Length: 176
Image (cartoon, rainbow, N blue to C red; front, side):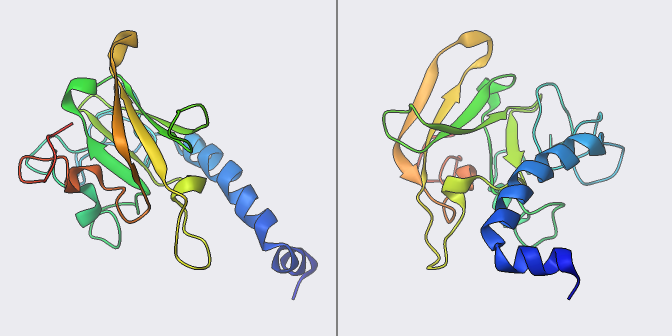
């Protein structure tokens, strides 16, 4: 085994940390996606990461449905860590905290032009450990322009991070 692979085999946690830092940089460097394909494309943006103003996501009958139905093993492009639709929050943020008091921010996703938010980048509190459990996240939706903040009272885990599974017209909670 070459020297570099031996090093990472010996220190897998370092490889995991590097992937958390390097992947977002690589995604940013990739630039657009968009185009006129049937994968939700529109104007350019970073593929696999929602961004303010981007029209890279779906604006059809799939909007508001559980993104994880397609974006876990397929046929959707990318394996999402978390995703959903919050139409009223287009231009706002969805924040993921490690604590109920919401003082330990771990991820902040921009809500795109269609009200969708998503990422393929690992979020530590939504990443399962060796036993298959994740610490979980407390979620807040920040409306655009510094508007109201809506705090979800419960906690989500990596198994419940498809927000529209519950928050939809057919779900158990009101749409976001």
